[in-house]
Length: 312
Image (cartoon, rainbow, N blue to C red):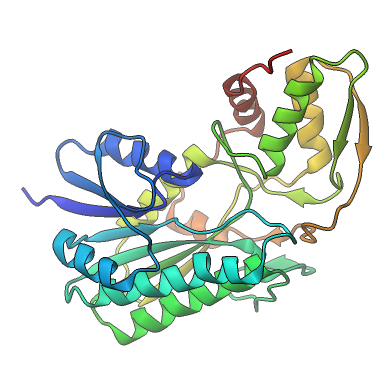
């Protein structure tokens, strides 16, 4: 029996933990799971090696020993804020990716790599946006994700033993999501509002729309895409639900879940100028015709239940 060796970067993060659990659930003794980075996965099924992914020498040494068949590269800086300097995004999203690709190429064996990218690389565009649409990154985060995608294309093109997938993700939600994202922040603020006599909720812009996805479903899509045969050096997939939802609709659903009545004040602090896209997922649907995302309401209920009550 051939044992598949799978490496995850960012296994301690939001998507990384969901992926580690998904792979562990499917293992049946046919997979060995490894992770690298500064923090280990919460899953006992994952063997971790701790170091900074900016350390190319350590990467070369580690990958030459692990010799993974599949690499899920989820490590990076995903929170979008004008307060985060470009250098931080560049280090976390591009340089770490480039180092990983170089070390993977130095293994001199077949390897397939999935890069967790973002639909933010498209910027704000009119009309239907598919994988052939020209990218127009409009933030430091989006630009460094674009650079990471280009690095994956270049390394895969120049190395016949390497295949790559750029997974352009729309907005992810789910239990355990850290603060700094719309769903988790709204849940936290509403939990805090429960302790107030006349609560007022201050939020960002409510009109932008997103195609929200549950993180537990996203990682299932990752695993299924990596299992597909691939003849081209790289493939790019838009990964999103087919339902467009405004931030206001997310808030309204959470208000129903919480049973709260609050005064809502919307303020635009300018941290995120991404308005939302009319995104085509036809390519994903053609490759995974039976794949579905769970309803957003189910995800929001799980998120609400997962957040601890504030201390009054």
